[in-house]
Length: 286
Length: 275
Picture 1 (cartoon, chains in turn purple, yellow):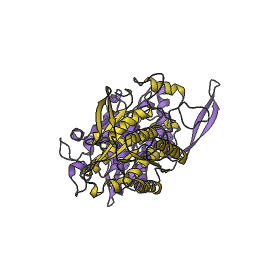
Picture 2 (cartoon, one colour; picture 1 turned 45 degrees about the vertical axis):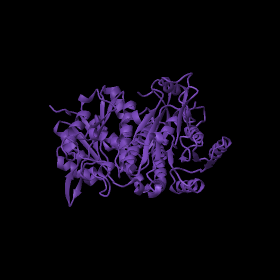
Picture 3 (cartoon, chains in turn yellow, brown; picture 1 turned 90 degrees about the vertical axis):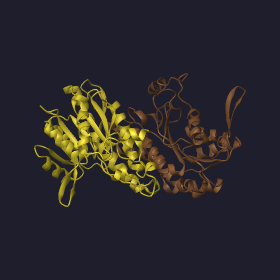
Picture 4 (cartoon, helix red, strand yellow; picture 1 turned 90 degrees about the horizontal axis):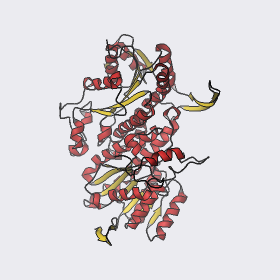
């Protein structure tokens, strides 16, 4: 018996990348792999189908790979209709919404969707005075748009499942603990990581009747994110390694918390952003 | 040096900002206008900014009638050229800048299933990009080597929605939550230059954004929502939320020398609505 037996899970972002024709699995890919090992059906999505396909092949089994455009502007129109009790109602008809089309396809194939995990990120380190509008827009789009489109796309489906099947869905948003603590020389990147925490709390309220929405605020995954420019005092710029390991975080350290929040064991947890950082947050809070 | 003393049994503070120059974005109306008037009372010269020229001019006239010094700089805070001009005009008029109050912001609420990308982008840009553009524009002045260790001040505006989220405000929570992290990042980045960067998270405050929405109004909120929000404020009386002057007092603290040793902090001003 696995924790995710019969669960349909959609995992988006950071599935992996190619290095000289070799595919190196990313955090999203590792999470999908663990879900499959525990009996779940993983559907993985990113903006590049070559990446999702390679990740699905690496995990093996029945993993489904999807490519999705999260960057074309979505618009909607209101449509009037009469419901089954004869009342006049208005519903939203979306246009240009590939994520919704993908989610509809998943539900048609598997009958439901139980878990959504978003893990989209592009790291750029630059001081405030050097961060121009183009970089601001890039980081905004890469961090916020995919997560927001997926969350918007699953909302009605998860709500309907609560009404028709009585199930609570699980949503896990991966962000960085720099979104809580801030990070010198990466202010805009850290700001949008903080945005994900604000989004988590708002959606925990909006989704509260049919889904748990939580965030994992992970510690730095690389030495590069743990250091500021070399010409400045290190303490002022942030960052420092964790007390626990004195090493960057790894996928294996982060994945268990993501799986906990994605499982039915997390039924009593909502609107939280849980730091998985080996104690770095303690150090920064001093 | 500010004077702090007991006068007639009350603690009065005078001239906390004597000789200082402040840019206050979004100060043609609402909280920003309240801050501008309080700053002028404390001896500060102010640049009044709003995207609409008329409220700028009206506020400047009111301040001049009070005997204060102010200039009007209408500008879209997300437009780099307009913001750079605002900074240049301030230096031309007053010779320097000591304080930046990133107050300009707005909200447009919708549940996530009815929130399109235009609305999402608009709120992120006005609140977050505007703050970033204005911060960037004052940096050459704030990081000048010849300012002899004098403290400079930046106050950013988050919100209780950025701290704890709110139904129908996913876009606003993204922007205001992001500004908390942005504030801390800037505080770290500029700490060696003695630039204090702090944030305030106002709760429900009486402005045109929170006024009773009437048919045809773009801004405002329904009475039922107002009642819920105001009902959650223990300090409120007679069905009225916080006043711009309540928030201005906190901003004044973060802008004067009383807070010289504070940076990277968030202060919630919600009348007890968030404890």
